[in-house]
Amino acid sequence: MKKIVAPFLLFMLLIITACQSTEEQEEITVWSFTDEGEYAVEAFQEKYPDVKVNFEFIPDSQYETKLRSALATGIRAPDVFALEAAYLRKFIDHPSLESLSDAPYNAEELVGEHYEYIQELERDSEGVLRAVAYQGTTGGFYFRRDLAEEFLGTSDPKEVSAMIETWDDIFNLGERIHEESEGTISILPNSASIGDVQDARVEQPWVVDNELVIDQAKIDALDLVDQAIETNSLAMLDSWSPGWVASMQQGSVLFYPAPSWFLNHVLQSNAPDTSGQWGLASGPAAFSGGGTFYSIYSEGENKELAWEFVKHYGFDEEFLQNLAIDESYYTSHRGANEGVADEISSDFLAGQNYFEFFNEESEKVDSVVRTAFDGDIGEIYGDLLGSYARGNFDSKEAFWERFKRDVQTYYPELTINDGI
Image (cartoon, rainbow, N blue to C red; front, top):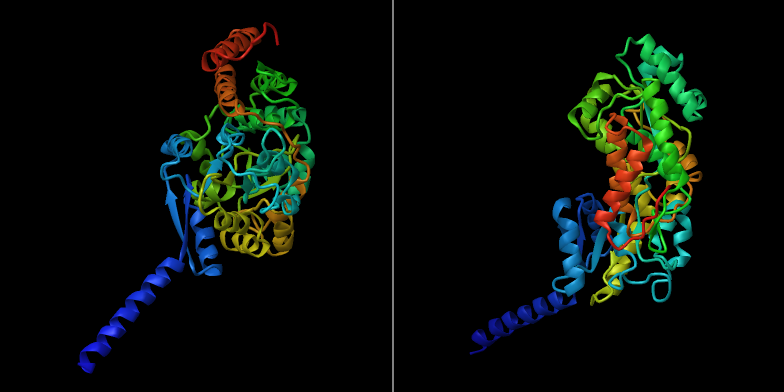
């Protein structure tokens, strides 16, 4: 009988122990539209081995709709979720995003390490912190060193920067380069190069008090596009088109104004044979583009653990330095970036210390107020600006008339006044 009971008791003990182990393991679910979060999940689980992180990568085309539904109904809503800068403002004032400013999170004590322009995006319309960034999206003018040597007489980034301090500088060079190359080389790929930089100069969002506002920087962009066309400065290659991608490998465009992530996710992947032929310079204005942010579901049952993950991803300096080194990833965290700047350079950029470059530019990027309308209205404006550059409008007046009509169609609740 003892021979039977002893194994039985041992068996029961193993079951109880396994159940206790399962019960003790905490879990959170994280949603994202990009798989790059897997690096953070792996690092987080190394630090918290008793935590299970269910990371769900949802294709970008489905993500916003699926997330909106989950947050509205609470059905299978994630504990933590990513938000892209293009639609961040649509979500940030919603009560489903947990306030992180006060106890028990006290994120205000940490967020000061993020660049000012990023902090503006992390806060809702009342200034409450509801999203945390890990990515620095500061921009610069990526340039082909071989073309710079040929047409500018130098490929030194500081010397190149001194030659493109204003749009007039750029268009004067563009006209000369077009002539000297017999039309085979352009200084900029498209009108978006102008629009993206000008977007950093706006002083007002697209909508104020439910009324459409057209900032002077947006008005000026049309004049700049006119100037670019007159000087043959644009290659007329739509962003993300096959021709735009091919131009990087072919060397038919000198400058590509773009954010930090352009290096890894666009240049290196689309023009691998051009390693060592690129540099980074500063242009007429410091700017940024895109970005990914993480928020906590306010009705979730695992908010404390969710915060540990978000805090780790956005504020843990050691993790962010590892992310910067291992993934060549420019972060949102000033201290992390400064701590590794001396040891990070890029062979693709001919050894240029690009973290040092972005650290300087990040302090110059102006904080710009955004609203829930900005993403969609900005897209309408950008598409029409490209159409304007291709000569599809008879006048600026026709452009603005079409722009207002399209905005009114998209947002019938807005007040849209005559004139600019």
